[in-house]
Amino acid sequence: MRRLLLLLMTMALLIVSAVPASAGTTSLDGPSPAIWLSDPDGIDGVSGTEQGHAVVGSSGTAKVNNNGATIKVKATGLEKGHAYTMWVVFFSDQNDCDGGCNGADLGGANGITYGAGKVVGGSGNATFVARLSDGSTGSRVPGVYEAGSNNEFHIVIRSHGPKIPGMVSEQIHEFGGGCAVDGEVGPPPEATGDFPVPALPGECGDVQLYIFS
Image (cartoon, rainbow, N blue to C red; front, side, top):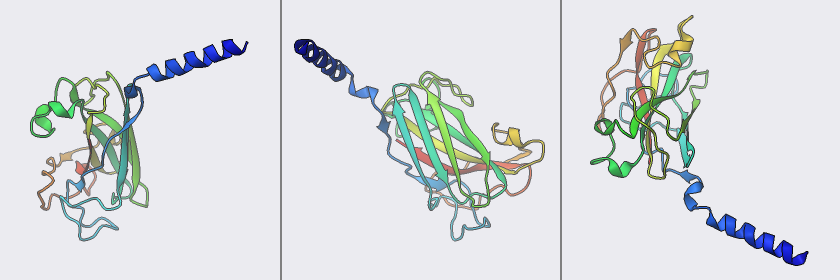
């Protein structure tokens, strides 16, 4: 009996040691940077901040395993009562990007997909969580996601302006939900300017960027 138990324990240890390290979870670095893509001047609780500046008090995590990825962002400085969506720009292997991952690399194993959406409460803070499954296709820009430790994610928080009665579901689920006027895409991180945060019903625009790699 003792020999049988020893044999079973030895077999269990061999099985565990045979599991590859890649089966575990990898935590990506970031968010770096976490910046404003628009000028938040005028939002309650946000002062002295401009387009291209850091999003003070924000945080996030991106964890990847063989099954997919979970990306969590705590955004700060948002407008209470406004609708927001989270969009995940995914690059399956950052080493395949030429001079850093950007829009020119989209397609193939890289794409853009919806992550989450909500109406922000009185604190101006909101937590967004996106889950990507290995092999899933981007809903906004087609690309087949391949989970791996070389993943890179660019998370865009998009404002859909004040919630509009009867249209809230569209505002928190669709890229163009509630958008009569759509702002230009924000500038690169080093730029600053006066691209305003959407303020009126029907105004939309990308307001924050978080990068994990």
